[in-house]
Image (cartoon, rainbow, N blue to C red):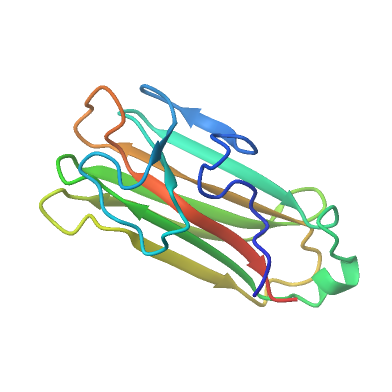
Length: 175
């Protein structure tokens, strides 16, 4: 199984390793599964999730692939890069979810980008955990960094943490 290059993908270490690019409302928070008005997760080993507030919350990691031990030759062979994320809403409040992942060159210029959302989740619909996954290929030589950013907010602007819940994030290389 490929190694997850994201650090602290489930909130086990609170918000360590994440750059908070937007921290609106009552800010980012980490909660225990399944949480108030929440849903069980498909992996019992995952016991925490990140949750957003009533204004936009986004967090990001930029992975330095050379520091992670990959050689320029390995990276220039254009191995498949897979990004994955899990998100859900509450049963009493709508929310939005978004994710952007970019393959970057040595100057952190974008070689290829994938965006999901913003997607709105409605409490009267199915708000259980959903997976989004994307595999990059044919992006050309020169990839040295990967940026992964995700987040959202609640749609009712309720004080507290009623926004989208995130866990199980991963970035893997098929090397």
